[in-house]
Image (tube, rainbow, N blue to C red; front, side, top):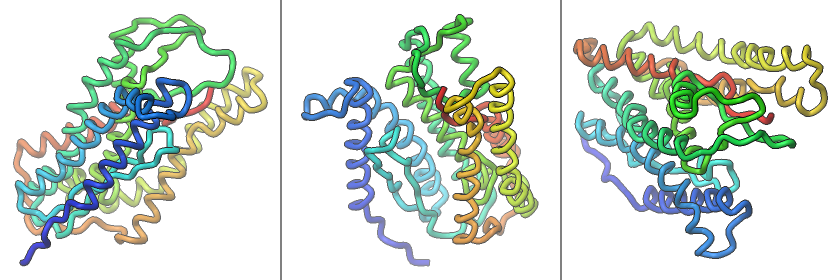
Length: 306
């Protein structure tokens, strides 16, 4: 089979633009206003470099695993969005041919999140260590989603936080947190997400039923999260905008369900089959540990106003 020549022009251009985009957003975090000069733009490195390191580790993990198994994989295409909270919508790669063995499928699927986590976790630890515990502001403020792993790091580094106070994330800590969020989203055992690849390598065609169940359950998860945050707030007497914030805490899952439904219309409902059904014992252990990582990173509410 002839292989396409890998073209790096557009991927490198998008990568450079995403660096600029994340520098711009990071500088706004540091300065409290949009940067207006190159000197001010440079202040964004404390956010841009750690975030891009996480994303590049994730995407090039897939890329080099594909090269190792001689599967044609495109370079990563980064998505710069300078007006978005993080300055980017992440990156995507294209697997240009069917992955024919389960061993290769698991390696390619797991390499991204595991390599990304290897970079994200130290950044989270370093960032939270340098983030102060301060009194909560009087007006609305953003609360980041918190997983079991993230809460464990907070407790380890900051201990019990007094009522009315919270950890105010530095830009570097926010970049690390974003890496955890991106990894969690990609590890959902659905379709051709990273978690879907890993789950198919473990379960074979049975994963297609799991994937369809996941898509049906995501709207229910959105409702449950909204109720879990909104009902207690209502019973405490919260009203107005704050009640709206609490009662819509799970809407990210509904939006993600819609995005995944659109993807199934484009790629089909089932994962492409593999020809080799065997999976080595070591890879099987890595696969289950990778899916366990989704539970450790699971954030009921991704981000919300408080």
